[in-house]
Image 1 (cartoon, one colour):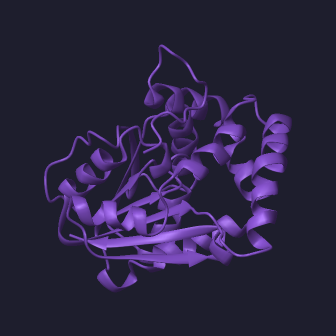
Image 2 (cartoon, rainbow, N blue to C red):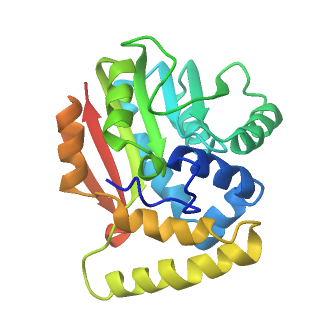
Length: 243
């Protein structure tokens, strides 16, 4: 799908390696910029996405592309699971997550480890629920990543994916495109150490097969009852599926 959309256009490093390097570079400012550039709306999106799991009351959860752990912390607050494991390819992001886990004294519930979404080191049928927030568009092989998450999910388990989408209606579409293509890269260059990271963001969103194209891919790897729920005029979307 968007394997050619990479942070640095390197001829020697894979997309996966470039994404890991990019998040290592911006890990120190990631949380601040997320909340600042979205005007805090990203917090509301996470809450809505996690509430999709309330009906199944998951005990053991996996948070893929966990980053600094915000999605998992929201899950702990809302769902009260027994255990959450977060995986990410960026050690810089995981270092931030580990500090937050320690500061909140949540080591008994939430642990993080280096992990590749396309080759998860867990047994088949292991987790009650899997979550991913703003991570699937960074997968090197999206279908492979979805298939591996399907593999480690228990039968009857649920996946919830929160990802940026592309608004279709005027004038939201035009305003969104301007903000994402011009304001976001400017703010990213201003506050982060990485000039490319926040230019890659709108490029990766534009290349992502959102909506029906994405739910069709979920269907292809085996998920049932897949749904696409749009948030904030279509700026982001919650995708859900059952194994």
